[in-house]
Image 1 (cartoon, rainbow, N blue to C red):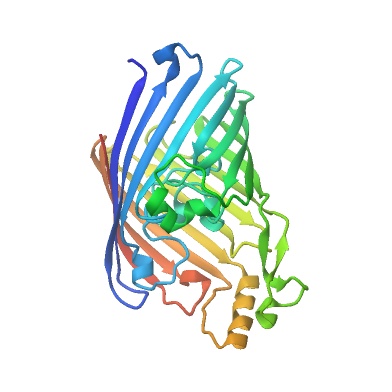
Image 2: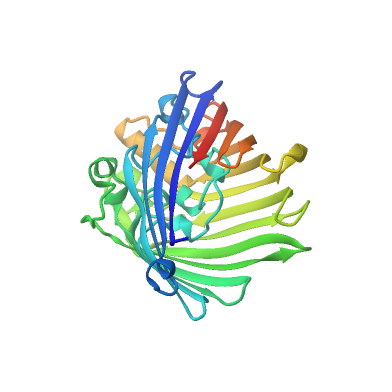
Length: 388
């Protein structure tokens, strides 16, 4: 009532591999979230102002790495970016022009605004803002933030356009830095450029059912190393020379969600499709496609859900060619895929009351790392969360 709301939550993800990798293991990773949202209009009469602050704490182990499965996409999406404290959000938002225009400034995560997508599944292929799955070295999603500014224009109730400028600094995603200073409101040295995403969206209804349709693209002003050629235009795996540098890195994305059965906004099935394509000069993972259906309210249990999804993450063959040639020159035995890593996931959500859910899931990964040299992995998981 006074304008301040608090967020306290805990989420955990368990995973065990029955096949794939070098050994059978069980691993657990978790995350604590502590947040506060302040409605500045209620607090101080500051019309249209909102402040958001969030810190997170991640812990645990990564099944894919520990069992040497070789997968590209995390089997426990909650793992990563340094198992430690992070300053995840610290921003001020101002609404203008009768709330048609929004400006945000501060420490932001890219995926909270651009190509945003729910994180219902446990495999990273189907979780969160998809471009961050393939160009994670500069498109930085939760829980890591960077200094940024965004502007969003709501042309109508259904149509929006937005533009952002995010600091690109590899220091933020360095594990050593994260453990020492990831929770601090600082600005470390090492900035290489700016990530500039652009998005157009339509949030309306089709046949009386709600839908969300977003398309966009991005440009990173930072230089990008060519995956195959050296500074003289020769195969760098053969010559061993420094890579050719490109002026910028880029890509495009689309994210569609549409309820297709049931009651609008209630029980029923919602289908989704996410596609991201990065430039082939610099991106080791250059494409990801994911599609699926989530059915809300099966068996007349309104809070329960069933979800199934399939996805493909493509390894850039230019990088694989470099690795093969570099192995031949140096005698190393580095493995690099040049095809797709395919993932299927099925889950059921049991939610006995609104603040708790348990979500057992099955995952099957074909050609982990985009290569048939890695054995297919069958994984059983449990995703759970409680909010206070």
